[in-house]
Image (cartoon, rainbow, N blue to C red; front, side):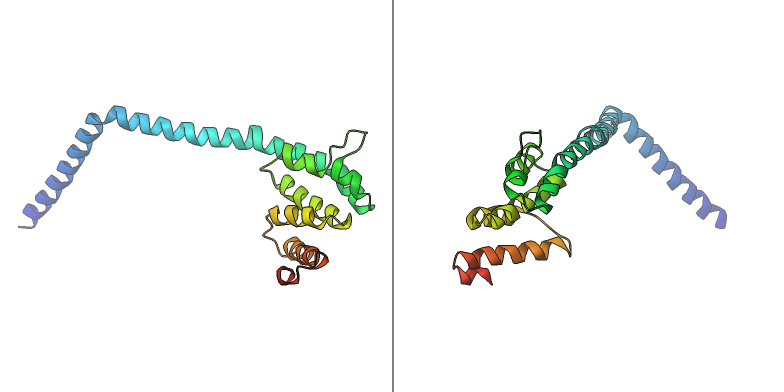
Length: 159
């Protein structure tokens, strides 16, 4: 009796294997196409990230560097709009390198430059476009937005 149960178990396994083989044979082209599509998608994503996005991020960081120096020294106009020596300015960094982390940071710098230049409406615009998720920068930006609203006597929005 135990032998009969084992035989039935083996038959079921053999049937499942046979059915799987039949399925694979019938759908071979679709399976191969699906695997190739997955490989191409993964390869495309990796190529985009390593051959394009990473290099673009690096170039944007180089472009931002001089502006940070101008910003620290209080030369907000040069930090914002660039200089005659090749620095393009925070505004151009946000446009030329949109979608990068550096362009996002350039929005914050641009907003702070406008705030220091007393152009509070543009400051609010750029600061609101900054997308920060950290514990250090995001609260400071939120405070700068509130201060800009307060300077415009829009105290209801400043809080």
